[in-house]
View 1: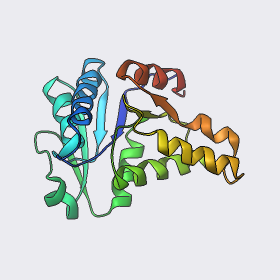
View 2 (view 1 turned 30 degrees about the horizontal axis):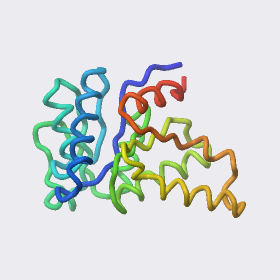
View 3 (view 1 turned 180 degrees about the vertical axis):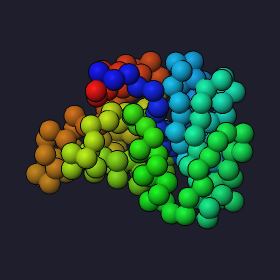
Length: 184
C-alpha cells in the first residue's frame, strides 16, 4: 500500500463554532504536521478551517490552500501558507481531490456536507478508492450516518456503500482508519 502523504480536510469555516470543534481542528492540524503529512484544505483562516491550517503550519507541516477568488473575502485567505486561487468551487474541489490521498471530515455545515457528498459520490461511481473518515469526538456525524443507513434500507444506496465511509471518535482512531484503508 502506498503511504498516505497528503490529507484533505473538509470542515466548517465559522468562528462561532463550538469551542470543542475548534480545539479538535487545532489538535488534528498539529497531528498531521507531527506525522509529516501535508494538509490540503479550502484556504481560509476562519473557523475550523483556519485552526487546522494554522496548527499544521505552526508545527512545521506543509499546507496547501485552495481558494476561489469570490470567497477570499468571506473565508479570508490564510496568507501564511501556499495557495492556489481558482475561479469556481468545482475547480477548488477538483484540486483538493487531486492533491490528496485521503479525506477527513471534521464538524461543519452545508459547505462541508456538499464537499464530502461529492467525494462520496465519486467513490460510489468507482472514480476513486481513497479513504474518507468522519472525525468527531461527540457523535456529530451520527445523523448523517443515519441518513445514509435510511437510503440503504430504502434500497436507494447499495449496502456495500457504507464501507466507503469511516467514522472515528478520536484523532488516533482517524489515523488508524486512514492507514488501514489506504490504497496502492
